[in-house]
Length: 178
Image 1: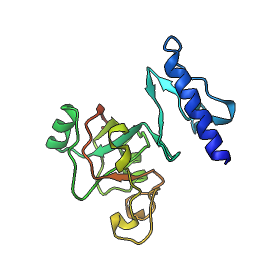
Image 2 (image 1 turned 45 degrees about the horizontal axis):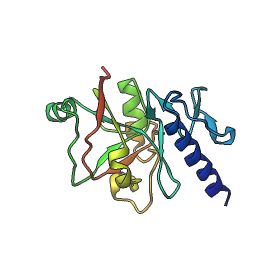
Image 3 (image 1 turned 90 degrees about the vertical axis):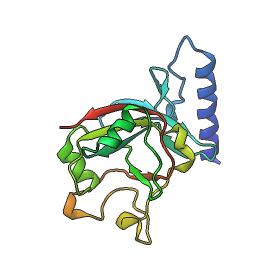
Image 4 (image 1 turned 120 degrees about the vertical axis):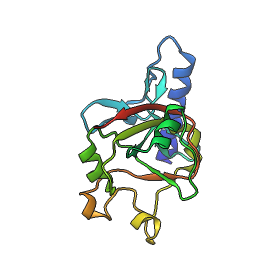
C-alpha cells in the first residue's frame, strides 16, 4: 500500500512537471527525495536539461535513465556508437549504471578481463523492457549477480551490472578513458 501510494505521488509530481514547462524541475514530495553517494541531492524523477535521471515502469520499478557500456579498442563498436547505436547481441550485452572515469578502476569494479578504453553512455528508455539482471559466472550460475563479485582475479567488483538482448539506438556520448 505504501509503495503504491508513493509511486502514485511520484507520477503526480511527474505530470505536474510536464504541465509546467517553464519550470523544468519537477515538484518531488520530500519523502521521495534521496541523497546520492556523492552527497548531491536528487530525486526519483528529477530532470536535468529536460532529461530524466530515472524512469519508473508501470510495475513501480525504477530504472536509471543512463546506462554505460565499457569497451576495449574495438573499431566496429566505436564506429557503431559514433553512428548513435549499439547493435543487439544474441549472447546479450552487459552494461552498468555506474559512471566510472578511470580505466583501471572500471576494469576492477566491473571485473572484466580487459582494460576498457571507452565508456559509451546511452539512454535506457528504448530498452527499458529488456533490462535483466544476469546470472552469476557470466551467465552460467544458478543465482543472479546484480553487483559484480564473482571474478576477483579481475578486481574487487562492486559495480552494477545488467544485460540486454536488444539493440540500443540512443547513444549519447563516447568518452575516452585512457
